Length: 313
Image 1 (cartoon, helix red, strand yellow):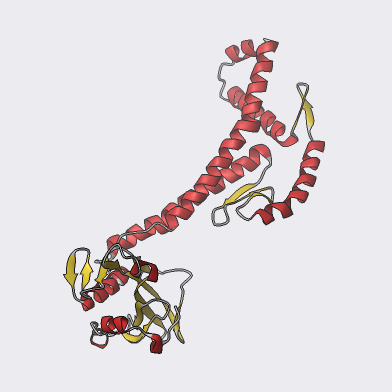
Image 2: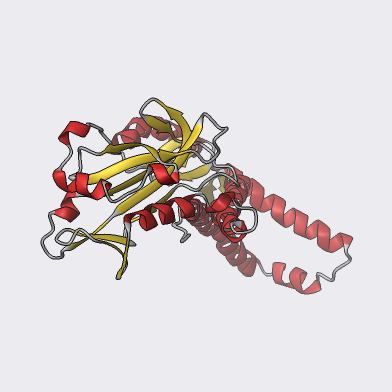
């Protein structure tokens, strides 16, 4: 947020005067000028660490402040940790397990604009209690025992679960490639689907349009490589997989000396063979790829959502 102390409102000055920043080691206290009520401050986790600091921001969005339906306005509190540079803090790409936790609170602390009292839910508290509680939650992961449960929870939601969904997505990506020759991926942030390197859907329509011409050329190439199968033109790759699958099953049955008499009786009926081939190939060539693409897509979505799940501290 922008910082210019000379534009600070009188109400914000009164609010800041309630805090004993220096007593608890906070410094660089500055008001926010793009909100009528709001300020930021910093604190070093380790006095010997001259680079990394915690940044605490406490403010009431103007839209909330101007809402006349209630006198108690919810504070929006944030805490982050990173390298200090100039007037800001550099965001981390990867948070280490024992580093402070980036957090935000939107519905825990309140400010009565008439009485100028601070509340945690319905309980009145003083300003320092609010600031210290925000900071202590922020550094909870730095404690060996006290932060153990929280670190495990974070590792499960932010690391293990996203990895599991990504593993599922990639596994079925390669399975789809094996049975159909198609490379399908889904990227949640852009809500973008790619098939064989070409964008087939995206929330950014222009990206789809640029891929359409190349995709049509590749589709023509695929049409040219179709082969005749039981009187129908079918894609080459799926029929090769289909044939290899059945050959593999036949060899396994023979190697294991499994009786195939009933299967041989079934295959002696040409009509039943045609029905079996049509239905089973339709499942492998159409139904199975459709299901695999859905699994790939929703596994990617679940991975993204798990990695960004809000966790109560």
